[in-house]
Image (tube, rainbow, N blue to C red; front, side, top):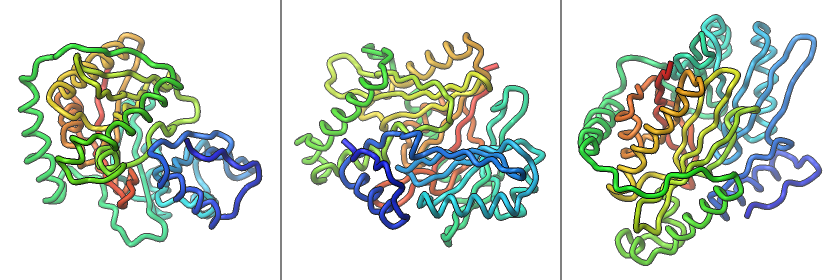
Length: 333
């Protein structure tokens, strides 16, 4: 388990060392509201931030338009305090130019995120020389190859898979955490897995799960965890949902990629079932940030009617660096 948060606020260097220690000891990172959330409210500014310390991403939710230079200065100070690698925000169309003027790049969009209007994801990588490519209908050749040669072809392959049956059931948060830790341990100690890949302790799990899981995306979202386990299988996966009822949107995340065709087929069935149930309760849109290297998961979203509406640079952290993620979205109403 992770070390308990300290009651006193550590300095930046000490905080970074704690984060590195967390990454080295576990692939699970628990969200701590007192440590990972902040609200800034002054005469000129009113915004909140939520820090995903496992992926070193700072998300800004702005409640008051204007004052972008002052806002940017304050956000950069917070990013330095948290040790953030990436800053991003979801905004409505009217604020795009203001954020762009202070260095943010539009990476993608989520149709219907605010029920009646779309959200635009704008980001920056302070202190990094990595280039963020603006959202475009014309992807780079490398990204086109991933979409067309890997993901679309895989989506055609899995379309014919039959549901093998198994357990698809909701877990409470504590059970989901316990199940995730057990699955990571099982993967990391599997003799068969290490024989096939030549990977050592925890490396197999790290390859499949390129960063800690169960970090919050929003301050008030309802979190739902779904167990996915095919018949006669010791392995299992978890589908994590974060639903914002006020806006009618839901973020969907897999613990890890499926290990075989049976898991792929049951995962495909599970996502379709979840989308049907979400539509029944009035959800408007669903979205996911999926690492580009997770070909099977990306193929599942494509097969479930999601569209690629963005490509997010360094959105997910792994022990070996950072993964770019594909932004998948689907309107449900």
